[in-house]
Image 1 (cartoon, rainbow, N blue to C red):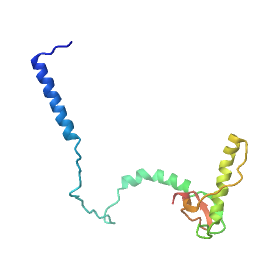
Image 2 (image 1 turned 180 degrees about the vertical axis):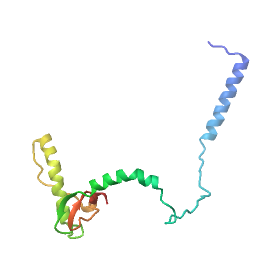
Image 3 (image 1 turned 120 degrees about the vertical axis):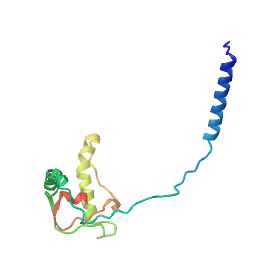
Image 4 (image 1 turned 90 degrees about the horizontal axis):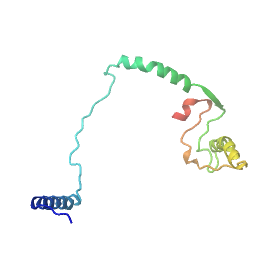
Length: 141
């Protein structure tokens, strides 16, 4: 059996009492709410002079990105969007055929079978492919 001196016993009792009080008040629900929001309107206009050091720093990267994004990857003979048809659209068929073409080799490798069809909903189609050259930048808009 462990014996404690009277000083240690009173210290342990005080410590346990303080922990109990702390736990009691810590568990009470405090609802913190914003009472005030401070803000400042900063207008952005042409009167602000451009920082030429930033332009100089960004220029080589911008040139490289513009070259990559302006590459023509295809040509669309007509404008394609999801509003031209109720259940089946040209752009929907394009997405489904592209999905089968990309996924079929993986599926064939795993299961030794071909994909018979692909069904997608038109909620994922968020852009229009305009008539003319299709560039890489189109999918980033």
